[in-house]
Image: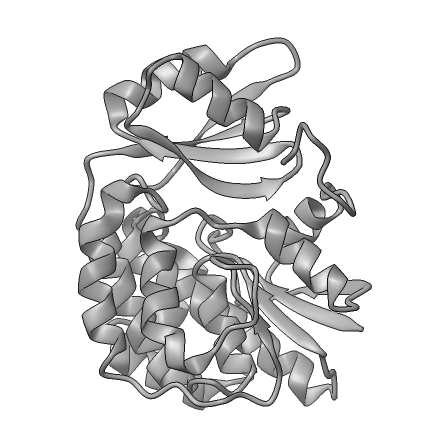
Length: 284
């Protein structure tokens, strides 16, 4: 079985999607009208470094992901499952027929605005340490305002939280074979500090219709199949709960997926290769 995965914020780069916009002029024009700025120029030229701004990065990544999927669909590619990392889950829902492209873009735009509105924090990637060890280290150091934000692979975890405490966490987490790298985002995404944005987004989500799709989507919050009647809860929790990518990949494998493709880069497939078939005590 085959699964297509969609990356989230962090894969944005100047020039992304350059080959797609001319192939999909109607979708590109509609997206620009909805967003209020020329999205193709944003992606091609990155004026004033806007792709580093969550408000611009998330809609841009979403659109390039979506057009990349349309290329695959046009070529006759079919998948048994879709999944996305955080923002990428909105692309998975569009590909699965749960929501329309422009509704997805409108939701992503509002999501980005709400997430960018909470700025009292930062994020860092921890490479070379399991999630269990990261959590034990944070707890042992008494850093209760720093949380695991993304469980990306067996050996890569993202932490986020209060900026002063995160600086202390970086020092506590560094060690032999462990790298801690800053993540260029504006706030403590996927942590309890984002709860106000999550609540506000839940109200937005309730204004939209989510249909039963034609292809299952695996939720990156619960690592279970996405259900439309739980859309507002699942997609709002995504903002202030960890991205459970390791559990999501294992759930897809348990469902029979043995091959993963990715749009817009290889970030997720590289992580998938680092996820063991079964959790060990260290990784649990």
